[in-house]
Image 1: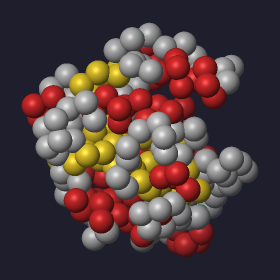
Image 2: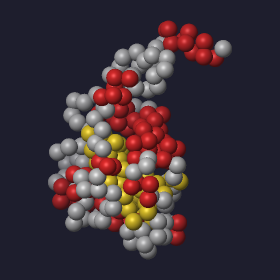
Image 3: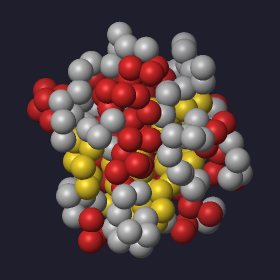
Image 4: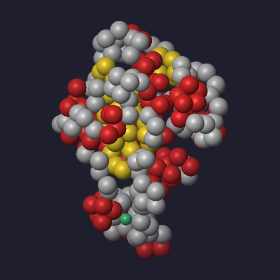
Length: 229
Ligand SMILES: [Zn+2]
């Protein structure tokens, strides 16, 4: 009955593909079949040496790193992360996280023990009402079948807005902004650090450096979008 009712509602309020805006068919979820096919997957999880991993050379030690897809200007898939961050479409974060998990399942990422999201600055989180990396981690945890904890790594010090700074200034600015609250919980574990988009990699590197201070920790990185530059 409910399904009939929903179908009836969809006649008047059809659900649209979150990427291209086309009306979705009954069997389609949040992306249409064409968009699912079109996602510019990076497949970074298939090779240990990739362009994303190279971002961290010399600034931190990351074991494996991957991004679900290429985050390009003008791409219809860029919109997804924008909606997640600025339009309060929290469900999108969970769905994309699940897709990321399905992508990296059965790869060397299986070595990871625990998923930890990159924390948002408290002021920003208060304003937004949520941390998009938490949502991605939640979905990832579901499909990848690994525990996720958002209470272990926190954002401590104040950091100014990053946009008008140079790369070098940004790196300095986020230095030591993060703090591991429960080091015993990650001792000798392989942590999978999660964020929405990677550009310079400086935020992820700062998080990783804090995590690496804990005895025997290994860090890998998984993000949704890799911004080419
Ligand atoms: Zn579509």
